[in-house]
Image (cartoon, rainbow, N blue to C red):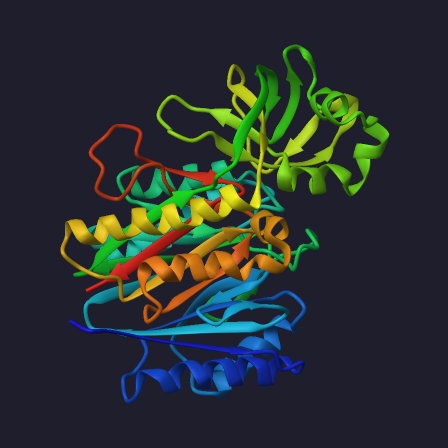
Length: 399
């Protein structure tokens, strides 16, 4: 019932060599154990096909899942335009891959298809699912609803939205030999193992509460019966013409929107992306009409404390079972990376100080995070998984 984990990275400018080297480095750390699974997070700067070809050439012919990222996370720090590979060898965990295409056309169906492929192979034994969606193409909340339609709300969903080095142009999802965009790649987990999760952001509400009076899909049209962009225009003294540029996305790193939900302790943070027609704002996910909305403010200190709190929450899940994590996956918002700037590796060190420096840590900077509202073992109602922004999500697995 052992779990063996190896992590390797490469900054080779040759895409095939980067894949080859990262895999070889990872697999060398599990000795003679044969990996069951490869997880790959990599810069979109690589030739994606050649990158995975390099992994296959190095002997990595087993199941592979992952996505392109906005920065690769390991115990060693943050990779820039790198490829990061984690291999897992376990006789106690069953792994199942799934892929859903066409997020732009029908995000709910894409989520359903990815989950259903896993369900067909795992049967009723599934304990959790990890997803890597393309949220540049469609509504992340609808993708999650599609997963629920297939698996039911009782299955915990975790994961991170694929990135592309903060370009917000095109992301990639990996599922075995499929390298696609506009899709959701997914990994199902079954078997005899323990899990833990921690989710925090550290952003605080400022200003007066407002009501989302008109909203459709990912477009927020009105707050308090006025164009949504008025909030940013008036608070920052800027015109909508200025905010039409990339100014809004940059402001949102420190000043996103927060939605008050009755079943959550913290505000649900949602990033405004672009200004649309008549002062409406396109967001990373939908905001329901009637929701209380606040402007939020982030600081390095509060965000750093939140990282530690997320790690402590994860460890409490394991302590309840008298276990320790064999590895931890870290999905942290790219907004946190930009907020921390040169101090971004401090977040990783803070997490490691709680989980233990010897515990393999692997993940990436995301365009959004997915996790349960409470924890895996909470019996409270409304403990389903949601899509977050500006958040750190930690997911650990142990024996």
